[in-house]
Length: 306
Image (cartoon, rainbow, N blue to C red; front, side, top):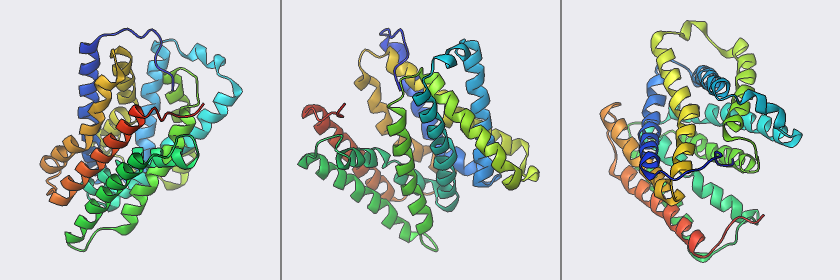
């Protein structure tokens, strides 16, 4: 997605929004687990997507972006609709089911491997060059994910293998969405609104058969509302604002590495989920590998091919 127009440097504002994004995205793994106590994965997806659609529609209306929809090309429209099938529909349905089957620390650690899947996919597809150090860094990160999963064997009853596979498979869906989204030249708010409009429409049809009206409760709405606002929609706009205001994207992009570690604090003290040492060690390996392969990418000028 293209950056917001009218970029002006204001690092104080950029750091404020980056820190806000850090806290919000770090809290969502905990929010998922709390919301799933009241809702099934599909129900959480349906309600949170509706909330996200409504929030983005208000932003579109207030900012006058609805009139810009006519500027979308046919190719961008097709890509945005396809993106909406991938995210929110398929991606979050798989991810929420993974969180339903796994303790939060394991689901979020495995899901954090998506930048590795993106880098590996780009190299296999020929969009980026293979480099020994990048491959080594990827191996370190995937080994970290394995450390996290193996640590789950200490749980009573072991760890849910279907849950692990779903969490890992969700990264491929996210990467497919990302690779479509990066080719779209439309306004970033519109590039969020169209997929979530598509998702809301598809999920509303599915809800006729899968949604239980009895599941609705103030607690369920609160959980779905939090996820819809602070995982799916508004936080992405905060992140775009941070990128736009920063004098350098590197100033704020490193905040993302702290998300899973801060998330462990929410998981421990809000969910009361004991954090395994293997989870922390594995996350350090995953984050280190991601940072390493990005460093090689930047220093060796291994960029995406046009």
